[in-house]
Image 1 (cartoon, rainbow, N blue to C red):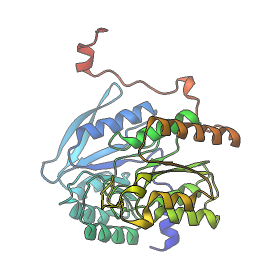
Image 2 (cartoon, rainbow, N blue to C red; image 1 turned 180 degrees about the vertical axis):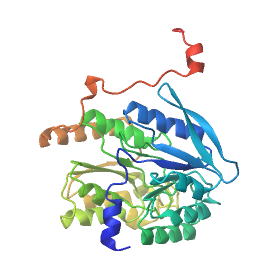
Image 3 (cartoon, rainbow, N blue to C red; image 1 turned 90 degrees about the horizontal axis):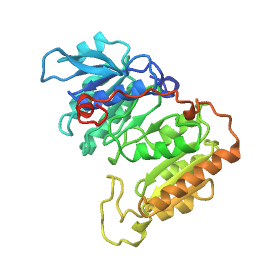
Image 4 (cartoon, rainbow, N blue to C red; image 1 turned 120 degrees about the vertical axis):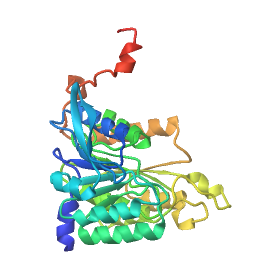
Amino acid sequence: MTGNEISQKIQSLFENDTKAIIWEQQKRAIQGMMDFDYVCRRECPSVSASTYPFTGDHKQKFYFGQNELLVPAYKSMEKAFRSHPDASVMITFASMRSVFDTVVEALQFSHQIKVIAIIAEGVPENQTRKLIKIAREKGVVIIGPATVAGIKPGTVAGIKPGFLVLLNNILAHNTDGVFEGIAIGGDRYPGSTFTDNILRFQDDPRVKMLVLLGELGGEEKYKIAEALESKRITKPLIAWCIGTCADHIISDVQFGHAGASANFWIGVCGLVSERVNMFQWILKSKLPSGGQLEQMKQVVASLWRCRKWRPTCVDAASGWWLLIPMEQFGAIHSAEW
């Protein structure tokens, strides 16, 4: 596959009709995705099926609002993709020991799949690099390993709650909404990098502003700075680099992700901040705190107001979203019952 074909294929990872297949029996994750779909008024759920080699073919019951749905579960991954040709995303919960073989098998369906999300943390680095090489040759985007979430309102939701959700809430409350959020993953070699995703958003006319949350470690922030300097990135960019305390640590300390190490001088947050600060807005903090979150809100709101962009989303005050029905257990123990 040529570079132009790959670029065209991955420009938009998720759309309103995107559907996914889940590897492993993750009922809570699937139900959470369906709840997000329902709240966002998707016409149909984003999960088509699940697959797991250690179980037989069967169906699992889930809820889409008040409607019960039976989602098929397959023993064979091949049968799952053959039975659901509209599924273009696979989310795998395979462990760090088995995820390599699982993703290699999934990449055989590269004519159909365009995104694979790897949840497992600590995948052997040599295996991760092999997967990245194969995926790029086939034009498939890997999110992760060690990713916690990906979200795009009205299309598909990620798996785990966490800081990504908090950041999206800050953006949504101070702009006209979030277009898409991706957690690239915490392992040393992410399948898709900051640069890959930022450039994808740069080329999408629906995106007006870019927000990047990073930690110390790695050279990706420098690549973003170079892209800003060369005018490859022209949209406003707000970057929050966490970890300035590393400047004062002389021992080898492991931080929140595999690429973050206090003795890796080129990735120290202070140096990154000095390099990037000349181009756009950047927030520096030792650790996330209430004060830093409030500063983030102010910067986002200020940029949004001064640009005077025309809103492209429905105002949340209009109540366009749907409410998820109360679970039976909660209803029974509720005073309203």
